[in-house]
Image (tube, rainbow, N blue to C red):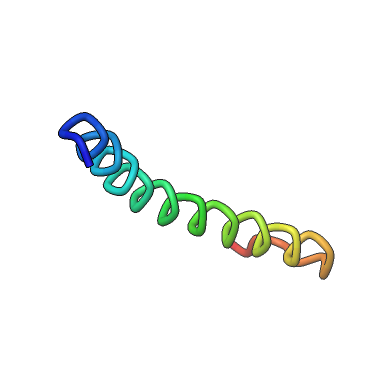
Length: 45
């Protein structure tokens, strides 16, 4: 593999880790909000 290919794969690999983490966090938040709205949960003070 050339140096350029190695650089590209390193950038792709290291940038995918935080993107996967953030994507999972956002998906979990969206599902949680959807479930709360479907069950009719209200905020309590």
